[in-house]
Image (cartoon, rainbow, N blue to C red):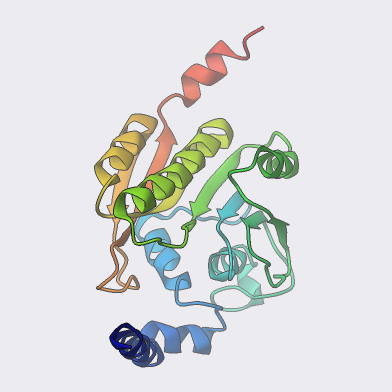
Length: 234
């Protein structure tokens, strides 16, 4: 009974914070599906990653706020300040998530588990051999409360995103990946540093203060030149 009462108090407190969150209110005004749009906006404005004409892959895309932000970046300037949510689109956006996705005009969506080979093959087929300019990953899993298990599962998702980036990013391309401070973080930061020429850890203001989430941004593959010089192994 005490546990149930405590849970109700936590839920009530979260709901109160959520309703009064300035980013939630701003998302409602701007037509974004979630406050997460402002996390990517802050990262993009700091590092200038997203530009019209690019090919962007959005991993863990539901509910779609990141794809919405990219879609608006790719809208011609004459469509309106900050781009438009519909109409002309200069660029390609491929989104993927294990959950269902409410359609966004101009965004191609795959529903499936990124950890499964068949789903990855479907994504690669849509990429079609083109170089991906930016991979954005907000992938996470439901927490079990067992820290070691949660850290291992999160690390696996990040490692898969890095592997996809290694295989498909343009030489100067970028990967934006959600991670969590705590067990396993230092290993993931090291993985980024061995993979990318520039690595930036960013904790956006739109991330909740109580949240352990942060974002690792890797720019420019270290091995890109070597892979292209050596070519495929016969």
